[in-house]
Length: 159
Image 1 (cartoon, rainbow, N blue to C red):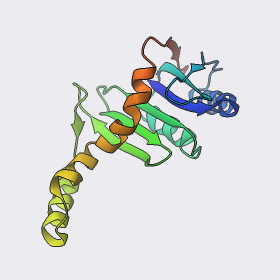
Image 2 (image 1 turned 90 degrees about the vertical axis):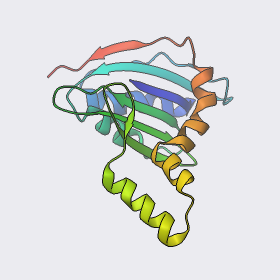
Image 3 (image 1 turned 30 degrees about the vertical axis):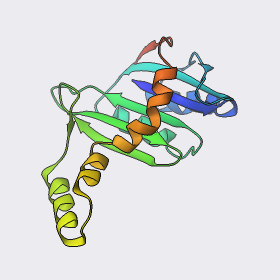
Image 4 (image 1 turned 60 degrees about the vertical axis):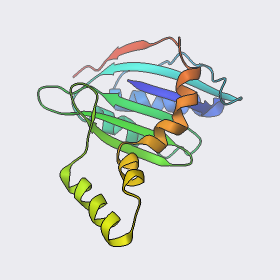
């Protein structure tokens, strides 16, 4: 899924072009006003494609600083799932997800957080919260809620 939670109106056609460039099909999103951000618009798109497509979509959208979005992909036989979240204030967050949607944190990242907390006196709970994407969830939640009931369009990538 691609969730564009908020984008200025002038950016909307550029989002469609970027998504079309990744998916290889024409994209016309159904844009609706985003009540959580006056002057901004939101849209959703369900897509199917090869593993790695979520990464390509997130990369195609990441340079637009005025946008809030999420890209998710379900795990399959050859790849774990992924979640990308982006906000103007926080930048982009990436997590690997399991079959039930849980965020999977690699052991080296957990070890680094433990080491930093021990050696630098960092807040372990805050570090783990960041690994789980909580700051992004906190910022995006009002925009997610404002989008309930939005239409969803399905696209299938031709390979």
